[in-house]
Length: 428
Ligand code: HAM
Image 1: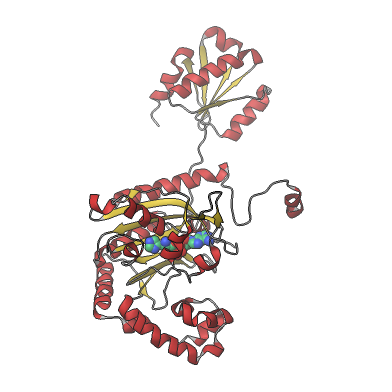
Image 2: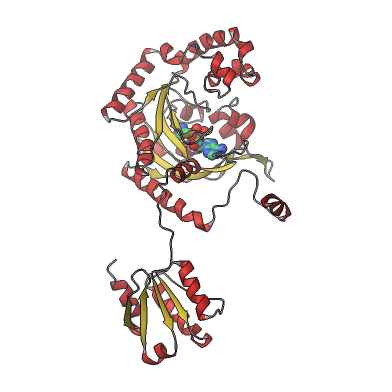
């Protein structure tokens, strides 16, 4: 039924995109405000980058052989013949801006955050959209594990502040250029030996991206790689040290985490720390957030050799969990006052009164559809306003209004000239 109605629509939103309607947008605003506050508590400042960038920024930054670059980017050639891409994630854009504006020269440790749409042409399903929203943070300029610990503490603090339960922090190290290459040779050898047991997708990956096979969700892959060598056992001293220090710091802050040697992430830029925050309530798309260290990316994109670490999280997934755990107890905005009138001749006076209240910052609504008083009262109810005033002959002649508190039923007589002061003086 719903589908056939949808099919008849002349225009509809693109598959995998979602309208955020007025009965939901206030939740987004509240959640975003809370995230901003926490980011500011940790002294991260907001950065906003354009919605599209040169395609090669992402190809280079995220990696040619990743799923994102290989098959998920919204890439188009503009009228000037340039290949552009809607940003599939934020880190590459943030680093481009960091290099372009010499942010590192102004501040040796640059701490930025973002809340932004991102675009990936994935198969839409619960928790997976083609236009989705990420919030995240990047700390650029320090190689020390204490910044990794701060990023993990910041990301988990956000979930904690919303009262979210049943999430897990999983950490791993993906090593550096040296130890990872050695490990990859060992892993490839193992994978070739069991290749006939792997899914066709993973068989194709053995040469180009063998580590991704370890976090495959395919049952056959999981079974076949049960005894695969894990990178944690092959880290060089520097990477091992970094990882041990991170564990120590997280323990010191009493942040609960699990070490999971199969966290490899879907983007190529990671070095050393990689982590994910998983919710047990999200079904197959269970990653609330992911991040890690990317010490080589800034140089790779043309900047100075600068270490960095960050994370990004899906807004829609956070909202899904909030919904499931009944934690979205946000107040929908509503007018404080609804002014009804008994006769059309009072419409202008009502408009003027509303104008005065609004000019004083008091939210106010009245009827625009020339409805009967009964319908106006119904509307006042629907709007759930705190107070209702009815303007009639008597009120206009006497200059006194009756202000009804809809919660208590109490009625106050207020002089018409004094109306805004009455509301401004309310102690609520
Ligand atoms: P990512 O793991 O690709 O990492 O994405 C981060 C989060 O974005 C995921 O954990 C998920 O919650 C959300 N997400 C990703 N794709 C979708 C989708 N199609 N629909 C809905 N939500 C989605 C990054 O993007 C890295 N830039 C993170 C990072 C920042 N690493 C270092 N700094």
